[in-house]
Length: 416
Image 1 (tube, rainbow, N blue to C red):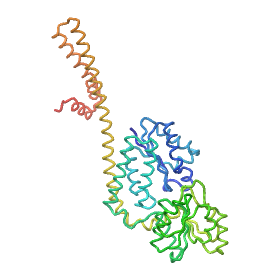
Image 2 (cartoon, helix red, strand yellow):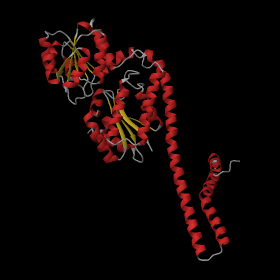
Image 3 (cartoon, rainbow, N blue to C red):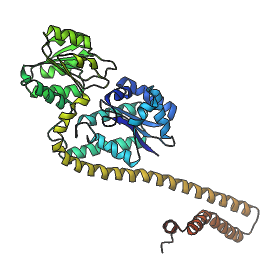
Image 4 (cartoon, rainbow, N blue to C red):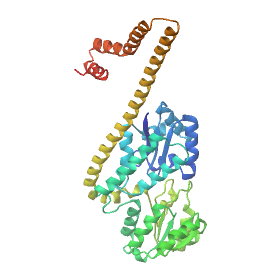
């Protein structure tokens, strides 16, 4: 068994590369099927705006084959991906997932959304048939650790998130958000959280645009907002002081021309846009417009830093919990290897025994003296059973490996 993590995140890769490597929800199932057919590995794909990671139980598969699969599947030049790609194995991989699930590796320390995103990724991979017993236990333990971190530390105090950072930035630009008109694009968990933060700031004019209008209505109804389709954005954009977007669209939804037209109708009153999506929902060129202030996920880093201080002490406590549980999980994983060894050793011994019994019965059937048969069988059986341990003892002694010799002595019952 070989647990491996391959991935890129906001620390290792720029936004442009993260966009190329990201898997949309519609792509995940097909990618898992392709990986299973070509590599024969268990895999969970976690892809968010800040990271794309492959969690694998490789068995005997070489990790380089997984790297090559990712390069080929995403049609990327290998030299573009390699410098940003990180790899963790065994306990490092276990600790990494626990840290990610607990919000310790997020852009905003301790943010809670990542746990839900990992649970969703795990569920999708399980439904695709790419999660075996080891990954099952691996992810369930990570979920348990994340819950303990939330319960036993203050990592969740003074709630911060990408959504919170976006609203905080809007507050810096608009003195009083209560007078602002806000267009929210998307209806997922992040936009839901943005809407909550905006409501807390007293914002009353909100419009929710989504590809599926029923989901937009669902979210809008909770905040007294209007629900529209993505096609209706151009006619609502001129009335929007603030636009915050987070969808899973593979292509931009709001283009430079659309914003330029809206600004003319606004008589060039400033428009504040935050694009939380990866790939981008808003064309990068929008930022070139004089009265459009466009911020991406990476631009939120400064605000994130301001909200980190109060969580650093809690993070140290959380790291201790993660280290403890990662060691416990690896002990369980190693125990699986011992179970396999015990099973193989027992099967081998039983084969030796059965062969000796068959030979003895054949001798008795041919009229050989029973006492002689018993003595010969016992002698031959003893020699066969002690042959391999005797060879191991001789080799350990010759090589001066005294610790190994002590282990063998204990294993065969020579404790003194």
